[in-house]
Length: 139
Image 1 (cartoon, rainbow, N blue to C red):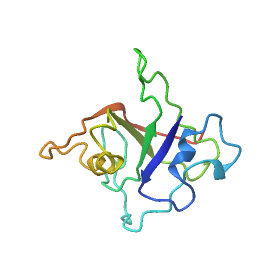
Image 2 (cartoon, helix red, strand yellow):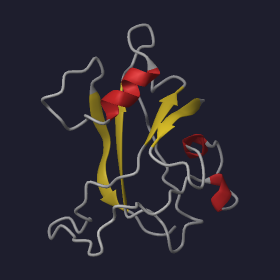
Image 3 (cartoon, rainbow, N blue to C red):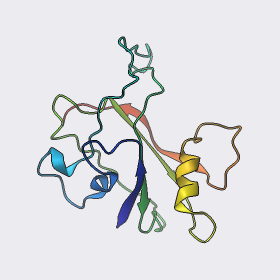
Image 4 (cartoon, rainbow, N blue to C red):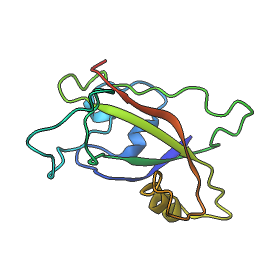
């Protein structure tokens, strides 16, 4: 089990929908965000990766029940875009952290998520990539 503890946008859903044990029956079972108000008129793509060059990313922070406590850790992540035919996300990146609740609060975890790739920021939470940013398509 798990719970969504924070996200950048709750326009059409909540991040806990990302933790459903089954596939969604319609878009209401997912987490869809509104268009970002600061989105540029012209979106540039990285010539190497083909991904959009933008700092504008929607995000969610999910707290997993066991956090991959088995020896194997997290073995599978499903990113289901089946009901998002024309408005699926352009890409996804998934990062993880080990945050023992005896030493760090959910608020500290969420605050540290903004600094995942900022090496000058010191935090009690150490983030690591589970899935590097990859392009998505409609499922």
